[in-house]
Image (cartoon, rainbow over all chains, first blue to last red; front, side, top):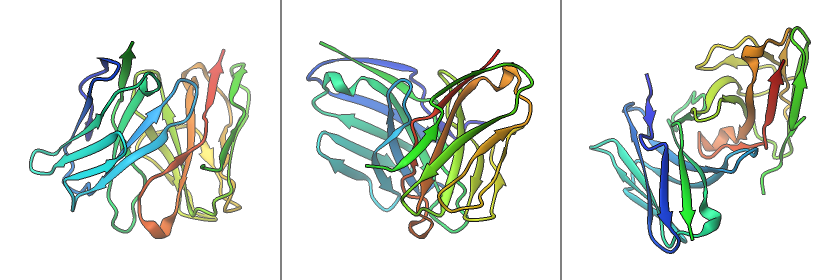
Amino acid sequence: DQQVKQNSPSLSVQEGRISILNCDYTNSMFDYFLWYKKYPAEGPTFLISISSIKDKNEDGRFTVFLNKSAKHLSLHIVPSQPGDSAVYFCAAGNSGGGADGLTFGKGTHLIIQP
Amino acid sequence: EADIYQTPRYLVIGTGKKITLECSQTMGHDKMYWYQQDPGMELHLIHYSYGVNSTEKGDLSSESTVSRIRTEHFPLTLESARPSHTSQYLCASSGLSSGVKEAFFGQGTRLTVV
């Protein structure tokens, strides 16, 4: 039972355009959401996060939107650059006591085309 | 820059051998995790630790074991490697006092059992 779903295994976007990566979750206890970026043969690196008290968080070219009623979040990258080509993982967690780690989606492979 | 290190980066080993994957962090984080990832699949939590002498099993059943004798060190051991253990193993850490927040990952160990 996948609690965090990324339904697009891959996404191809032209350089300079907007990349939109989507993520859905089912567990209502999740109140903290993160995006990680992963290059081949490397560990994931933290990109941006959002807590459930917000509906938007922005950091440079990256913006994460959270729609709690729909249990949906998205990552927007504007403008997309060649170095953005990587696998992006959505992750969710509970910031309450006893948290035992993050639940990750399967990832979306973003390909930025020149 | 996250200071969490995994060795070896790559390991090819024969069936039945005992192996230990090393993970060390210099950030003083209380919580440490081991995730397993197969290509195209999500990251699965297999072990975690809240601190010294604390170890718990994660969501995905694993034949591996872990220990946490020192805050900075969280090794994972397979007593008898099998081809089904072939995967990428990712170690991560986070600060307990800040709740879940972001976890910092090592570069991973790509294990191949032949």
